[in-house]
Image (cartoon, rainbow, N blue to C red; front, side):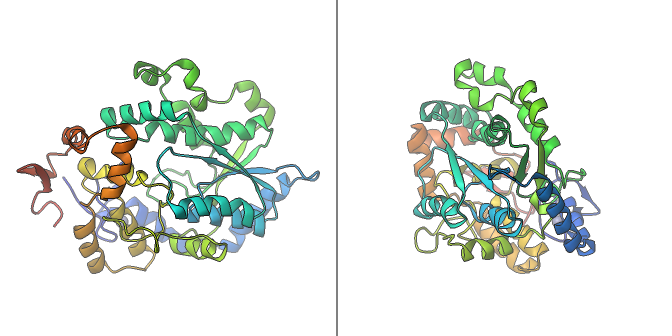
Length: 366
Ligand SMILES: [Zn+2]
């Protein structure tokens, strides 16, 4: 049965988020933050960084970055505060970039004076596999997300850099597991989780799948990698990360694009069609990113429950038209073909069909 958390309104259809007494795990995890000694945590981070700090000027850690506000916060903590010499690695998605996205990407390496590698997978391959991910799972970026997990780590290993960082841990968004400090177990799981056979069945050739092949055991043994979630060491929040990012020249979409179905203009702003990927949770689970963001704001004390309900009711069902156009132009669909694929995935416990469109059943959530 569809239920929402009584503290943050997060629906129980969110995968891997256990509920107990009508409260979601993310809220329970958030409540433990008041007992954290952040000075002590920062000392822990310093100890880790000091033990890896380069003595000969070589790169001493890898930070995967998108150019988003969280990326800026990560580089700030690791380079400015910890004094490390990070190598930044970006895995691009193949969609049209926003001006803000282009500017933030160019600026992050410059403003922090870091070397920065951009990895772009073959656009031809991306087009084919995004289409397959969309049609099979309503999950168009499944393949790109596998690259995101694998490539920064693989490059780090190849360069012999043992230390790498990730941003927020699953603990923040409601995992009940202990995975909060070390990111290595999750990283290995994600890297080994991919199914080469699946992509081969979808028409990819083995020589096209280098970007998702795990590092060799020999390289791993040589490097002995460590990876950490930064959200364990610093009081991670969207708003404080945004403040850090803006101080270093991050720009949002204020002057560029008022996105339909979004309650803010600074999250996931790098490319246009990415918004479609995010929205596609809605037919399956009855909520999309607006619910995710509202839940965080409520937990962090920046949004009232009543205000959040209004925003979610109004915005969660809406898919931005410009993002949709970028998506269908990229994979070569008509709008009708796009909705024909989505048609198969509407969750019938949550939605009912009204003429040509689907609507949330009365009483399910509102
Ligand atoms: Zn909650």
